[in-house]
Image 1 (spheres, one colour):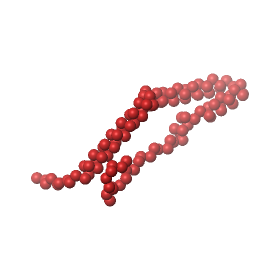
Image 2 (cartoon, rainbow, N blue to C red):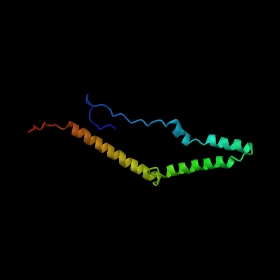
Image 3 (tube, one colour):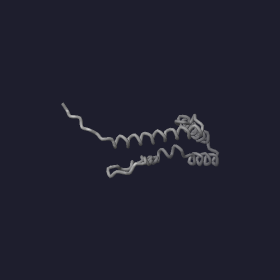
Image 4 (cartoon, rainbow, N blue to C red):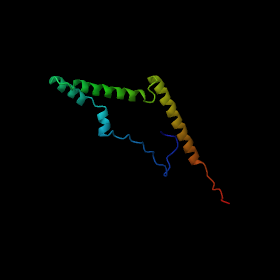
Amino acid sequence: MATGGPARPGDEPEEEEEEEEPTEEEEEDYTFLPLVHDIIKCMDKDSQDVCHELNELKNKFQALRKQINNMPGIDMTPEQQQQHLQSLRVQVQTKNELLQKYKSLCMFEIPKD
């Protein structure tokens, strides 16, 4: 965000934190196709494993529902989330402006006793 002041040589742009790529194990938590494939294979064979595979799929869905319900902001409407986001952006802009102001203040060294 621009603060309106000229850039000084010592100022470096802030680096944005990159989101970490999900690991292969985490990606598997959200993959349902292998389970569905196993269920279809069991049904083709008239196997008794269909119930087991269906229970695994059901458990995976339940775990993901629990994760979704625990997400921050899930209880807010999209409009409320947008308002909250705008409020946070205003706070960040204000804090950045204050930081720039404090950086430009003349600092005096305090003599040590």
